[in-house]
Length: 353
Figure 1 (spheres, rainbow, N blue to C red):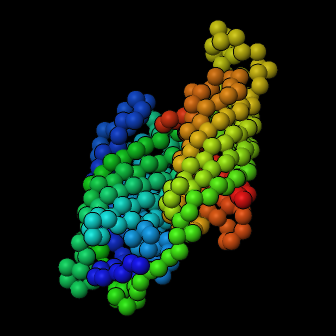
Figure 2 (figure 1 turned 45 degrees about the horizontal axis):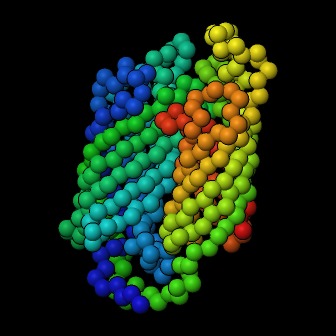
Figure 3 (figure 1 turned 180 degrees about the vertical axis):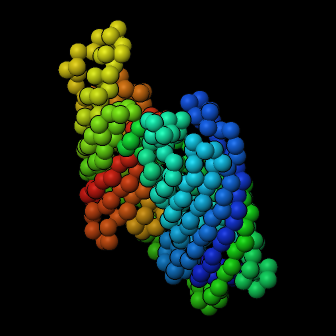
């Protein structure tokens, strides 16, 4: 039995902040784009997850919301990004520390162009995947519903190699802003919790999964569709965490362009043009369960079959998984990469039992 005493969170809130930062040199190829410090602003709308839900209680009553970010790089070749996110706030330290995870899509107003903007090798397309992570100090109800927050964050932009170039950017920043809360929860609205321990017992699960998308081998090459099929077995060791291990087959036509280029530019590599472009991988992963439907996953894999030496033999993947209603079907959205170099943006559907 858990009783919730003092309640300092509300049903709804809005936030607005300004930021100033530094784009990080994660790759020497973007050094020429780091001549100025970016700045911008953000707006957020939040709602506290229903406190009667078990997963809300287990995660200290988090917030879900949507947010907008205006990001001006102050570098002509890099341009300005406008992004829209879905996000979650986790709270710690008597709800004074806020961890924000946001995933969305960004519009880059000045991407790479072979004639008009050849210097922008970070963004090869106008539409990008955008990810933000923030750690904030929050002080609510300073004056009625008005409060303040400040903290540090990082934002990542990439198109998942759907169109090259895709060196991507990572921008670290500091920000400060104001927050307004309304419809605060009262103690009698929170009540008590008395949950059966069966809800937290570990269990084995099995998955089959197909993923797909489109990517490129290099600048000017054709955008080709790809296909990944695999399966895994795993187990939850707690309400929030679990692990899995699996194998997968990669059908990767974009490697045909990679082979053709290498056979011409590097004849010493002895490519014949008839090499197999398929790959087989084995991976292990971690699952972070956010709610009954939503979870995050991270995989680390190794190609058991790797006939073409493209990037490294070790690969990694991170993404979001959503269980569809009460069915065994789930959807996934993630990015597969070789360390910091993205290979593909993957969309998939799976079956779990």
